[in-house]
Picture 1 (cartoon, rainbow, N blue to C red):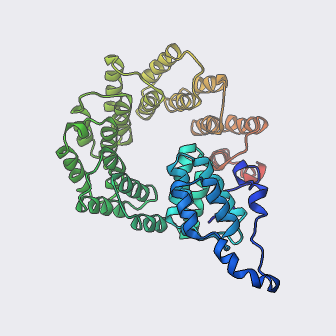
Picture 2 (cartoon, helix red, strand yellow; picture 1 turned 30 degrees about the vertical axis):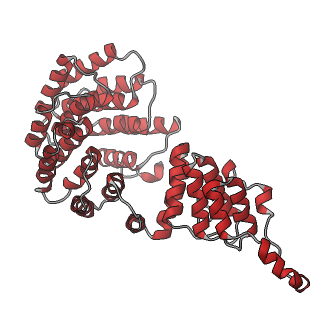
Picture 3 (cartoon, rainbow, N blue to C red; picture 1 turned 135 degrees about the vertical axis):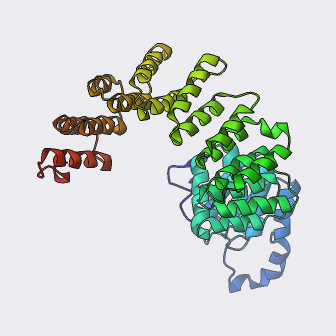
Length: 424
C-alpha cells in the first residue's frame, strides 16, 4: 500500500474518520485469560468479512476489517472489500477505504495487483486523474518501472484485447517498441482478436523497429475488413507510421484510399509531408483541403501550412495564410499560430513585419520572446535582439537555454565577449 504519495493532507479522502483511526483491538491481559474461550466464539473472522462483502452491508464489513481483525489487515480481505465497493458502483467508498488502509492501519497491508487494479478503476470512475497518477507512480516506484506493469498483466487470470492493448501501448510510451511488437504477436498467438485500438497502439512501435513491420501490420489490418481500414483513428495512426519511416508514398496511399476523411486525417498527411521536407506537396494538399470545404480547418492545419511556407520561404503564401487567419478567426489569434507567423516572416527575410506582428500579439509566452530574439540575431540585428532580452526580463520572463544561445550568438557577432550568461 502507499505510504504517502497518494494522499496529501488537503485531500478529503485522505482524512480518516476518527471512528476508524481509534479502533485498535485491545491487547489481551492475564486477567482476561479466563474469558479467552468465550472471546474466540464471538471474535469476527475473515469468513464473516467475505460473507458481508458478498451479500451484507459493506460498512459493517469495513468496520470488521479495520477494527476487529489483526494488524495489518490481510491483503486478500482488503482486496475483497475494495472489489466489492467497485462492483457495487461505490468508487468513492473504495478510495476512502484505500486511504484509511494506508493512514489508519499501522502497519499498512501490502498491495498487490488486485489492490492497484481496483483503486485505479475507482480513480477512473470518479475522474480523479491526480490521485490515479499518484497511485500509478507508487506502483512504478514499488516495482522498479515498467516490469511491474508486466507482472500485474501476467498475474491476470483472464486477458482480453483491452488488457493487451493497454500493455503494449504502455511499452510504446516507455520507449520499448520491440517488446510492444512481441506482445502484439503473442496476443495473436493466444487467439485474441485485435481491435482498431490495438493497431493504433502498436503502429508507433513499428515506426521505430524493423522497416518490414509496418507493411506486415497494415496488411493484417486490411485482412480485418473495411471497418478497420476506414476507422479514422487507425488511418491517422497508419499515415503517421509510414511518415515516420520516411515512406510518404505509402502514407499517401493510405490517405488516398480512405473513404471519408476528417480534419485529423488531412492534418496528419500534411504534417507527414512537412516532416519529410515535402513542402510543395504539403502546401498543395493544404490548398486542396481548403477548396474542398468538406472538413473544417483547425489550429494544427494552419500550423503545418505555416511551417511549410516558412521552410520553403514562400512569403507570398505566408501572407495569404496570415490574411485568411485574420478573416477566419473571430477571436484572438492563438499564441502558437502567432509564433509560427513570426517565424515565417523572419525566415522569409521580412524581420520588420515579424517584429510588428510580435509587438501586436495580445499574449506572449517564452517561445514568442525567444522566436523574435532569435529572428533578430539570425538576421544580423544583434543589438535589437539583446535589447529585446532586457525587455523580456522586464516583462517577467526568465531567460532559458534558447535565450542564452541567442545571446551568445549576438555576443559573437558583435565581438563583445563581455556579454554572456552572467548578464542575465
